[in-house]
Amino acid sequence: MGKVSYGYSVPVGPIHPALKEPIEFHFEIEGERVKDVKIYAGHAHRGIEWIGTRRNPIQCLYISERICGICSVTHALALAFAVEKALNIEVPPRAQYIRLIVAELERIHSHILWAGVAAHEVGFDSAFMLLWKIRENVMDLLEKITGNRVNYAIVQIGGVRRDINEELRREIWKSLDYYRTLSERIKVLLLEDPTFMMRTRNVGILSKEDALSLCAVGPTLRASGVPKDIRQDQPYIAYADIGVKAITPDIYTGEIVGDVYDKTVVRLLEIDQSIDLIDKALTMMPEGDIVYEKNLVKLLNLIKKGEGEGVGRHEGPRGEDVHYVKIVAGSENLAVWKIRAPTYNNLLPWVPMFKDAEVADIPIIVASTDPCMSCLNRVTVVYPSGRKEILTHEELHKMSVEKTRRMRKKC
Image (cartoon, rainbow, N blue to C red; front, side, top):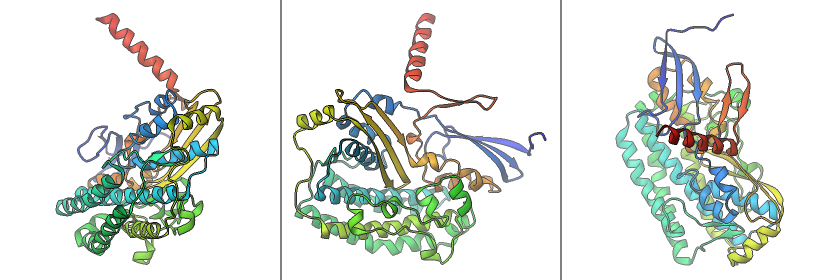
């Protein structure tokens, strides 16, 4: 049976004003309805994993933060977890609490940013500007704690670089009160606004079955009624002491639809959850050291003598982030560094979400998974016959050098 042909095809991207990052869609359209879609990623390859194998794990921490400007501590934590597991490095309890506090502050700023983007995509720009103004408070707080608004550079192998003193602790509590006051107003602003409801209810539905079979992660998965969260299922750092329960939309609405509205509900409820987690962490945080080894020379020698493999997992704002490392004795550089960011898992769930949607709903459906194309750091070649081939970093580097030579010859 031949390929079904619909009315016409609409390409969107790789650069498009409604999509904040480079990705390409080919939509098969019948009337105003999307009948099929093909997704082409790989427009933001930066070779970060290859760069990482030319540097030691401490240097790689700062590179990992540049995988994504929004989830910078997410990648640094996942990498640190992997290296610490490979080398059996024990992180002091106080550092584990500080890591939790920074990670949850990042979740608050990421979810508020996303809510602003979602409002903008449906034309609710007054809400977009208000939400991004509200977000500034947590960005300023992160700067006070870490020294930076983004790319915080607070994670160190075996702990953290900065402590939280009493003055900072009071600043954080003050910020938590600020967000507690605004939390209900934000919910009313988006979840009870008739226009926002009309544009997001029953739009971009991802069923529970599709979410599980397509391996969705994070709020995209939980909005479909699957209560999976690494912080709950395999607790790490201070999450094991405090406890986390996965958020699903029925907690607020009493039902699960799996649409864009439900994804909004999950993220707004997770802001409340993060506020409570930080509050408890500040109260329960023990005294003590904040890093396994303060002397960087000694730490590098330890890494150079060590050998092993490790997998680090962290529940970032977009979902489960996984880093794998291999360390061989005699070298301080990473022998292997592989990253699987949550956007990988949330690409295929777009396909059922787009089916039978209207063309005008494409931007909000794309935005609903909170994608990050900067995280898509792989190249896979698919030939017309269906054969797949993954290009390694070395092969890509060789291709790049060969292209330079060809261009020089033409000059």
